[in-house]
Amino acid sequence: MTRSPATPLPPPEERRRLRESRSLTQDQLARRVGVSRETVRAWESGRTAPRGRKGEAYAKLLTTTTAATTTTATATATATNPEPTEPFTPARSLTPTEPAKSAEPSGSSESSESAESAESAESSGSPRRSTEPPARSAARRAVREPPARSSLKETVDPASLTPAQAFDALYAFCAPALVRQAYLLSGRRDLARESVERAFQLAWERWPEVARDRDPAGWVRAAAYEWALAPWHRFRPRCRHPEPPPSQPVDRALLDALLRLPPPHRRTLVLYDGVGLDLPETAAETEASTSATASRLLHAHETLAARLPELSDPLVLHRRLAELASAEHLRSAEPPEVRDGSERRARLRTRAVIAFTVALIGATALTLHTAPTRYDPPVPPGETVQGVPPRVAPGPLSGEERELRAKLREELLHGPERLAPQSR
Image (cartoon, rainbow, N blue to C red; front, top):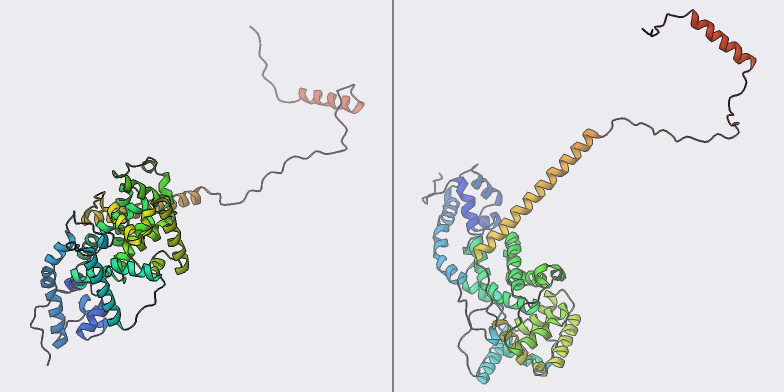
């Protein structure tokens, strides 16, 4: 004998909403409860009612959604409201990671971070083969940070957030650093903010795809870079006039040297020396081979060293990029504004498509109504006939013509009476 679950079960129309609020698919919920996907679909549609132990587990899983969401509200608020004026240190300047700790002496910090990287490499048991020179590898290990996705997972739990809360957490986590990176790529403050907003608007439109991505921050970063480096910005009216340069002469010189680099080289330099990605990761994000990425990076380093010899050291270059990006104090929009802008743009595109479809249907109907229903062959143009003698001027009448004239005159007399005007 089966019994109904002791936990109150929400109505069928609320079950799907509660499941989606926890970002769970029907397959995931079915695996947790221990039933098939068709059973979960029948429960949500109201065709069948959950019973027994599995029904009890299903009811508990749904009713704890509200409690789980409220417990994560504090974590979401802290994630979506970071400090706007956080220090822009070289080790954490361009990467969307946690706030930087207090500065330590250079020697102790480099040695401690090198020891931590060595311990992590030994504990992994599978050291990765490096394609960098030994000197550059040592310099990179001194400034390398943990991956951004691990910090994001430690900050908030994506499984316990709604889609809007997860998007706001990702935006607050990545937007401030992405605005600074976009400024290094484009050299324009408004374009940097616009690039980040467009990238996150695109991410919100494709949020199911972005949420399941292995590196959501990398997905948004690639979209922001593509928008910031688009070549058609030069034809926009507001981009034809240069913006005020940085106030410091050294910053102006570095920004001018960056903007003189080709866009692929500039992007590779920012990812490798600014964000802190490895060479294979940089090649994967720029969609190029490792050898091509290494060539671009070496060319960018040679060009910058020729213009600014003090930037030949990777550590100095990383620090100078961080100082240049943090000197502008760029700010990004609020997450609700970005989501509203994305939804508003989607509505406008939908209405434009509907209007175009209606206009196309109307034009087609008008054409079908006014089109002829039968085929009328065109009248051929006249042709010149050869061999016909030209018509001459009238001359004396022949005998036949005189007889015909007389006959016509006689017939007129025997014809019907005609009215003739009479003068008074």
